Image (cartoon, rainbow, N blue to C red; front, side, top):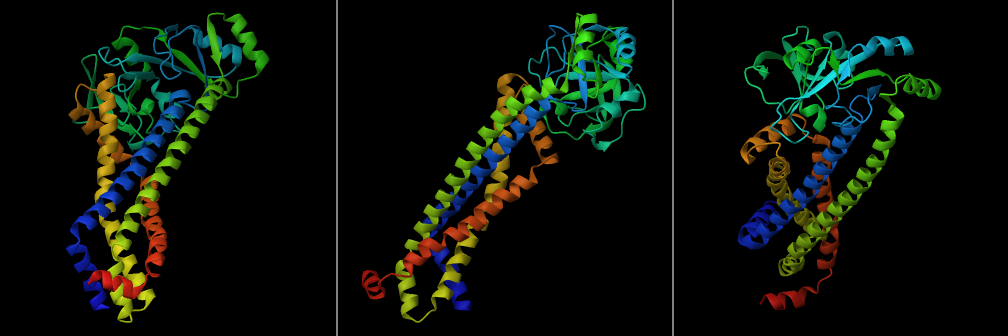
Length: 386
């Protein structure tokens, strides 16, 4: 056993080029599966958060408003509508004001503030929850998305200082880049007194006749039901699901073919050595174990290097995209912020699935070239060796 173990390490050391090529193949296979899987999952999460940020609520908005992820960021309604709407539906509503945090930023990420009454913040964001901290209980406190930049637990809105009491746990683009604060404070800060962008209302208030009656009585308003949101979300969701399945399928096939090719190359290059060991009376099961240990070592080394490189590649891709669309001024800042956010909500399930696929898939498909090699003509191979 000691001899065989020494034989493995000696072989890996002597045939450096082949060993390096095999490790590089494992690294590239790992990166292919992980980067495509993580990118697909992020876009699916973004699509879901983009269309229905608050699943339990319908929205009453101004007709013809400009939307920011189904929220009318460019819309301003009279706050006095709230009493009329609640009287009509006999249901409480949650008013909200959405404004741009930095008008110089053109992207929809990282630059919006949502003002809601302090008492309503935790109710509206209940399904999202907090990763750390607590909900605001003071007009000087805010909660932020995980990508919002701040230092010393402080953010500045219109040159006013606000303490960050908590960080939202969601990983969608909408939740990542938003600041949530007290409605009246936001109205005062931006001089939007008695103005809101929309009213959230329980999705139970969706009787078709009642909605039509409401829109007739309030022709300037639109009742956007969760069914209408889900219809659009559904079509987009199906599209994303199809794309994700397609890319993941090709990623898996590419990875397994790549691993099979390099492991076939590895095993076939050992024909002469295997022939000598067979001639010396080494059992085939022992040789199979030897090959599996060697392949496992190469695969583990490739995974140890490939997993962090996959994360770096994934973060780099999105950092580059953010710079190109104007979300960030430079690549270094984008890489640091998106990287920090990625590590906070790292897709461990996907990572383990990718690692398991490469490791166990590689071990299993290594059986094929190994079985081929065990059928070699021992004398013929030894003659070639000499």
